[in-house]
Length: 121
Image 1 (cartoon, one colour):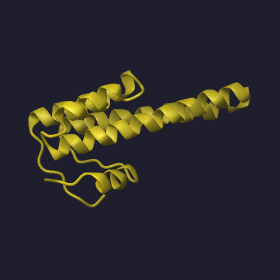
Image 2: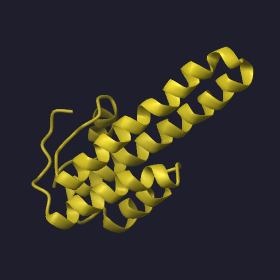
Image 3: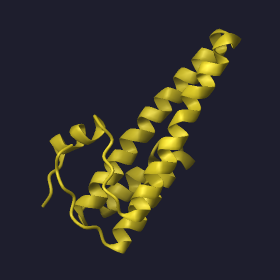
């Protein structure tokens, strides 16, 4: 974390929000990856948030696989598995709203990873 993102335009905010929204619909981040590939040179805000959405959706997919595995092992773990699957939904909704509003919300750990690879221009 610890770096500023330039003030996003209205178009940047829309694309960032759509990027986060798309991360759940295809559950593997394909829409976010496509937005990143086509729009990455337009602004740092958009580049940062599409990468954050892509990493978030990959982690969510891993959590989904863990959830399925837990429910197959025992039915007693179904409550834990349900919580593990449902908790990212709240974070996903929050990220989507923040993206549409143009807010600079950085997920701890993910933002630090992204800051190693991209820099504001």
